[in-house]
Length: 162
Image 1 (tube, rainbow, N blue to C red):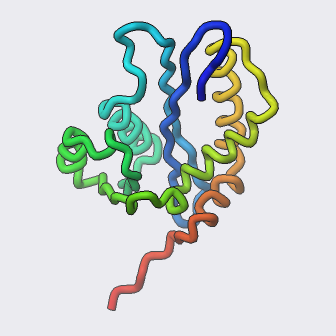
Image 2 (image 1 turned 180 degrees about the vertical axis):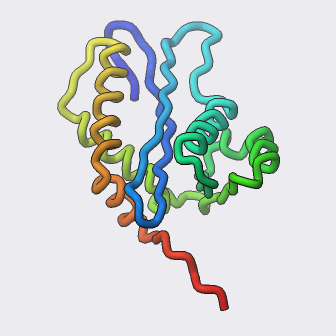
């Protein structure tokens, strides 16, 4: 999301929706605030994504199956090396190209956009406050997160072994 007018900058968001059969879903997210300064990174690095994976794993205390879309940084060799080093608790699954309808996090971003349609912000700090507030509201409404999985058509069912 971009701020226009007084000042400049944007807020980038990375997030994951975690589902475990029989438990409420969880939303974990990280913001990257870009102020438009020279030399400042404009977006997330592979290390930022790694840190999100580690934080999610630590919070849940469980192995993860992590589904990536085809964002360039998700395909970084460093992330592949990290996943290989932590294969005991991390498995990466690549979603098909151009398939946002299979990604529950896309439902979260849609909910966030709808929740923010009637807000006007004067500066970057105001945008950050509103984004955090709206994400927290989504985070603590498990039925919304469950709906984000339902709209993908994916399930948590494990196929029976034959």
